[in-house]
Length: 343
Length: 206
Image (cartoon, rainbow over all chains, first blue to last red):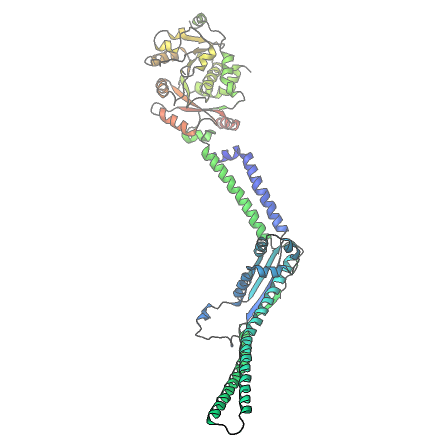
């Protein structure tokens, strides 16, 4: 532990610099994230209509896969947000329209929008749709636009689903009507050209033409019934599968920053943790790489008694022996003097 | 500040501990692990501090044949040295070099092509300790002249390994201590310590 503390003390300017470079921008980014985040959300109540007209029954194998409308609609919303056309539709009715028009990289723009949207189920029947913007007002606009875009898409899909079957039967009906008219015309023409008593051959032909007319009228009648039944069943099916989508809390444009706490905490936390991890790594690596004796504790690790003596560091360490020798040794030492003194 | 005042200031505590050593060692060796750690300074400074601490004679032997810097500082010429004493070519009193301090004497050495015979080393050390109150020997680094240092360690009363803060590696110090451990457990002198360490240690003793 002593080695690590000593390493930290020795490297404190570097550590202070590293911490400053990591912590300061991180905290500034966290603060910026907090003060420039304006979140707006809408809470929607979703409910399926009665299932009495729904296709299938108790033996329907897909019955087990049914999920609650809340999570289902949250997932639907999330999937819609993955499409660029939906986002474009949303953006084009908000204040971001002018910015979007000037954007060159649309994918990047949509990606940024996508990150800011969030749809989550709050329960079995509640869905929360939120958007985080950098300016007040935009978030509420985006959420409102997204709800409106979803609504318009659902309506368009309903209309398309209802009219598809009707259109099909309508065309079949028109064809059958033409066939009926043709058959009637042929019968009328035959009757006009064959007045009086008919031969057995003519009688047979007339019967055939009458049969064709009856068949055509029968098909016409059948198609008319199908047309009516199809419209009713489509309406019933639509009724059975439709979702009651009721916005309970409308998105509001908050003038104060909101919704950025989590992001700011994350950014600040990552910066603080990153700085601390760097601090620890630098100190640990430095302590492990520095194998030099640093103080009494290092000596004690090898000799329990510790150092016998400690000589403090002095500024003239490099020439200390020369300084001491110059002050204590004689400049010239004739051997006779030595002999006299030691005799 | 004179050399003695400077030495007393820096090495006075070591000198006092040596002088008042309970075991009564009179001969001390100063070595280092690999060199450049201040063993020569500590030996010379402690010798000077000892002269100011008591009035008896102190002998400083330069036994660092690898780098005889004390002898170089003394600039002696044509004088018998440690090698001559070990070869019986001269008696100890003839080889002593006086200094400005009347009670401090120096026994020089010089770099040699072949090592001096160490057979007479116990006798030389015994003679020195008989004539001087304290005998301090500046030795070469343990890990560079292991056999020589161990020979001296066997005949000296005690010897100290000088380590320099922020210079001596822990692993090297450990190896050096393990090397001489079979002969004698040395003491360690921490050189170039931070002022905090020095004051803390002095406070502990106080």
